[in-house]
Length: 148
Image (cartoon, rainbow, N blue to C red; front, side):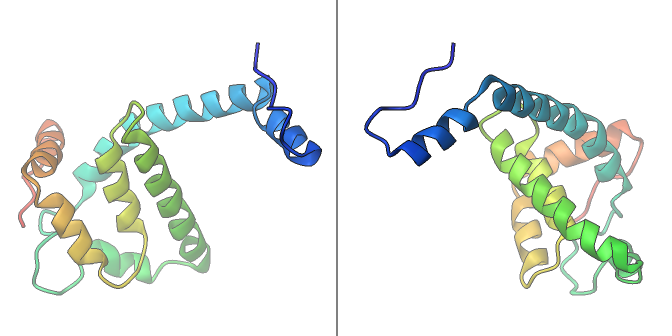
């Protein structure tokens, strides 16, 4: 049984809170959590294996995957930021929930375009545990390790 909202709250806030924690909403959030977890387990290794080996090289030139995406159709220009933001939020949640939080955040960042993105990605990937995890995933896919 779900606990009722505190009586000291104003009625509109109490009604909204009781609706937000209803069994139906909690079931939907649970389903979303499971789908995100399973999706990250399936999609992240595939995406990481597809990264060019020199994706994180500091020479200032964007990797070929980014150049191809910049010529994409206008629908992709809307979908990429939305998907990237969703992945970042899911990754942040996975830092405390089951899942590959840091790797999900990294993939989400790769879909966004903002100043300092490459520097932030390199900073995350330069951590030995993150780079080791990425290269272990690439090794299972028979891909060469990433170079920094």
